Image (cartoon, rainbow over all chains, first blue to last red; front, side, top):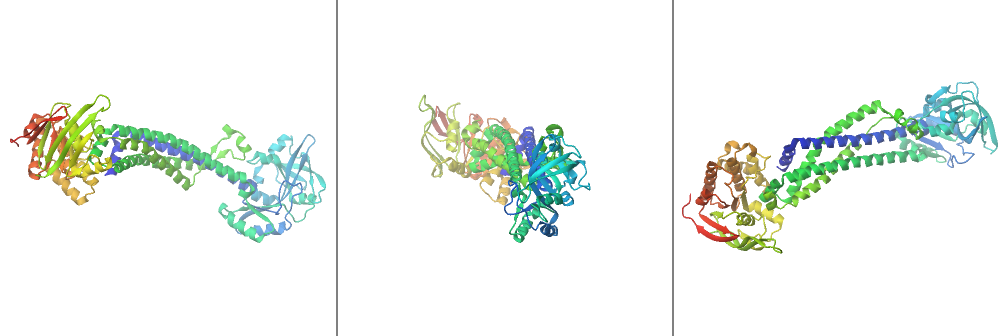
Length: 404
Length: 232
């Protein structure tokens, strides 16, 4: 009967109830949409990190660090790369030779990371070929060609076929310089990386470094993210003298961005729910004050405080739960639509997004558990919001309430 | 006779620290089972306050109220609510039915609070609404009932909990003559046939004439307490 009374009470003032139900629906939609936007940005950043920069896993020598001028190498890199490529979980694998050095032109210079790559393997692992905006992708018959990032090219006023001199230390700590022609200019989603990285054929770089059949880094792209821990464990067990790391270990900042995005979206959701809570409190307080006499009668007749509390709580809960499905449906519809079309921020953000390693197009998305999380938060908001009006009702004295 | 209400020396004082106002002043009262008693007196004489105290809706400033052998004076508000549920029926001047419930649900509601089994509830609701002549209005909400019909539902509701007695505060005040007589007939019949105790405050001469005992309050005190031989 308490449920019946609560349900019918909701419809005593249809306009007011519909307004609050609409508020709940819009609040839920807004909360879910913001969460989806942040989740989409986080996922996009993660995808860029995995598919364009780091890959799922990387293998290095145990004392590998980019801080050394002479970076420790993996000695059996060619054999290991072939072994990894044969694993069914592996989509692509790329062995990279790395040297930290200096790029000099007639007009300027810059500190850079020189990446020696096997072009086809790298194209499959980090989609480097697809990022090319000018020139060709190692199609020249010359061996001393390089791909340079658009931002660095602009900074040093380099064009296709411009000549650059790369200087770095070989494995004997000798300073080595070599001239390269710019064969192509690329632009990735991360302008900071574009400014720092240039790509040359691995055979050319290894010859200059004095390495044979060696590499400094083996990047491994898997068929799915979920395979990462399993493949990592397998490779770590098979190569105990090497360091096998996943993308979160290699790029902790990406993991941090993901968790920060999650926290930021929750802050927005909480702000929205807080506003919603005040709406609910206002509505329910009005409902209680309007029904003072009725509540007094219920208490006079023998409805105890627990049941009265339950009635007001049920009423609030119902009010919110009617709006909830509409909000969820609206949120789901909009998110589904935009997850396919994407939101292009080029006109608003310009290059800013790419400066921070994000794509200009955001594809919002929200996993089912986050929808559930938001619904739970809305329900908690409803229950907490009902407390104040319910306590107000409990404090009424029947004799005064009946008198009105 | 079986005593239902035993009131000793009760007073209700408002503003005791400034200018004391005695709404009820040193009242002694015994009501036996089966009485049909009218509380009369001018406005402000303390009728409603006394009824509220008898009904456990208000606490006296001093004195004791014993209902059916239980001293309710110092019961906690939760225990009082439970006591009211099982011992006292109320009929209010403004009917005070729950507007979102039908006549049937309004009567059934009390029994639900008492956890009466569904089958017994249904039988009793039908019997009670039949008794007050509203068997054809069971599924109608209060707004669609006349004042007289609403008050009859209120009487059925008051009876639903099988109370020790029914307190009625000016039950006919908002009714036309025909409805008032009809209601009085029902109350008198219940009193006569089921030995239900009724105590009602009233200004209405028609009600006073039907009472078997008339207690007159003046300035919060009992000015007279007379038995009437001429009843319904």
